[in-house]
Length: 108
Image (cartoon, rainbow, N blue to C red):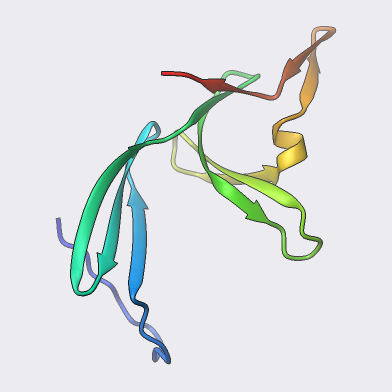
């Protein structure tokens, strides 16, 4: 594999470490560029099942800049990234008269 980093604007600082994530839902490979070399690692991602059936992988926690709301970033099977307030991600929803979690962690 060849990784090419393009520079579209002048850099006023030189990053010492750049991380790149790639892969499919369930696993991802992380390439860290540091001191002139790429270092690769494979991690198992935490997966969740949405109450409607979709499988998503947890990417990370984030903070909404405008009001500092805690957010959850997650990736769909097609690679699309989604973001939702943490309180909504972890809330219970009404399905056929029963309260169920919006997302349930899948233990592999």
